[in-house]
Length: 116
Image 1 (cartoon, rainbow, N blue to C red):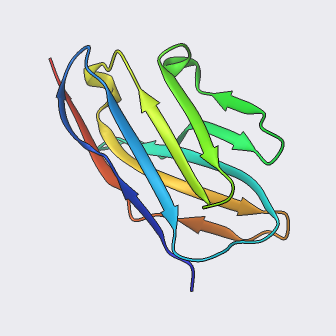
Image 2 (spheres, rainbow, N blue to C red):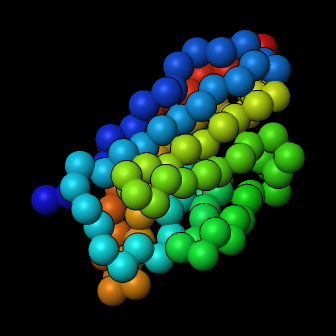
């Protein structure tokens, strides 16, 4: 069974930066997209950023220009560089991998807290 393990969350002051990482426990074939989602208390889970197998990226409007998603295909790792963090970025962040055959893998989540 594949596990996605996230790291890099924590507490940071507004304006600061964090870098999230997500690594798959074993190989995943036919990857379509890799991405990061977040869920704040009382809110639905939302897409933050995604990257396709071809390298096309997509960002939520709220993070454009501040967050950057990248991937390491060889090691099945994805990263989220988060700069200029705001209190409203506070949430549990989840990594996600989707395959072309409909498989959907999720990490356990990592807490990001931005203090004002």
